Amino acid sequence: MLNPGRQLRVSSGFTLIEVMVGVSIVGILLALGLPSLNAYMANSKIRASASTFNAGVQFARAEAIRLNGGVELVLTNDDPVAANVDSAVPSTTGKNWLVRALNPAAATFTLLEGKAAANGSTAVTLTGSSNKIGFDGLGASVPAGTTATFVFSNPSGGACATASGPMRCLQVEVTAGGQVRLCDPAVATAGDARKCSYTP
Image (tube, helix red, strand yellow):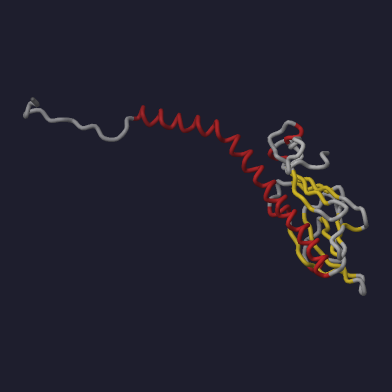
């Protein structure tokens, strides 16, 4: 039986030692998870940029078929705006790209779409085997038989997985027949739909 003359002391809150132990545990967990989180974020930027570019190449091909005429996607360091549609200088390492339709009678182009700086991520680099890829009215690449590979990487996040790095670098491949696909050069399993036909 409790002594009615004694008051009970009820402890509320945490002691300084308990708080310090909790903060230390959280700090250790963050330190362990931060590299994985950074790699995840860097890989997400690669995937977003590659997916947007893939959609742009698909759009160029679809517009060529719709217009029954020449349409090309051009990599360039010039601003991808209508004012530069005829004068944009093609570059295999261009940070911007534009889709333009050829006006054969006037030998000029009409801007259909333009994107800047690898979909807004300056960390992602785009390198093409060609500085542009064109399509004819049937959706085949032009000049006839042209193929192209566009590689997306994130050097600030590390080396590509093909070089034992943490980055899942991606490629957009265009075949001579005009087929466009997004693939992962680190996938080597035969029959895997993610496998690239060419690995640099």
